[in-house]
Length: 482
Image (spheres, rainbow, N blue to C red):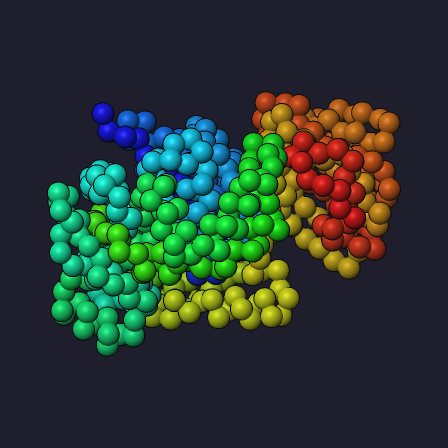
């Protein structure tokens, strides 16, 4: 019987490369970019075969924990664990944590490390590559997945493979890893042959990775072991110890181990892989699978009208977008920002995000719609002393019992039923009914119904920031803030 694999999915990221759709608080893996599932959900479903895989372990940013949990729930997946990183430390510490946790269950557990934001078109080829990699990993190899290059890309790392790994078809010993090259070097490598793109996917036995890390990157193992040993359960999450985890170097698994070990092997996997690292990559994917493509090589999404447009990616999220007489553009519209870029400059959108951050602008971090474990709120209008929000609360969910020092709130129910706590009162409000929450009142909003509760909230006061909140009771373990 085949040994089942422990898939570990890494969900971090800064949300810069696909701005304005992707933001720091809602990066690309949480978005449905290639079909109706988010990229994270598609990754999880790709490793959901119970004959091959154990339930997934997620390793994610603390800030995204409830969104990740909700996305898993939406596709009916119960994970082995959702592990929270207190801060980003690249892939080596994440892999060490995964191996340490798996080793407590079985020292020779097979671990598959997967980024959550990659697209794989050919799932059958992916499964074949996994089976081959598992065979090599059981023999002690640390296996990475190489992708046959189709162009001299400068945004990917490369792997040069040597002789075949004995007894494992389509698996080769690794000769060297090459960091993202200049164009001339990438062209020379493709001409020479024997090079693959580095996909960032790995498969290994837990004990073999930890043994190599002890030898090659001992600080990573030491800090990660302390972070796991001192970890705390928080609702249905495992929260790594912050002080211990912070002692980790910020280092990739490639640099810490794979480039130095003598046991690295590479599987050549032709599986329709893309890291979806730019708007140009999404344009290419749209052309490849025919999703939204037209005869002029345009790929569109949403309410879009084109006239005499070619070789462009045009995406509308909230409003009609019309384009006339343009070529080779990326046009992306969201509720609060519009990007227009030459397609050959799409890799450089991070420069725009950096300028937004330097200017202290919220568009680099958040969308107008902000997700919470109970639902979401969305900013509609604001002025010097007022703000209007749309709030949606899922059935059976409730906000924290809270108080604001400097603002009052008016709530108008537009859909569903609201249970409102206001100091010692409890009110039940139906559609078109409203209530007022004065400054300093303890209050809570709850949805006792079977459909989403939607309300309009009008805030007024001298300060309207989200940090003016004191929580007395919260279902989601969030501490008091003031």
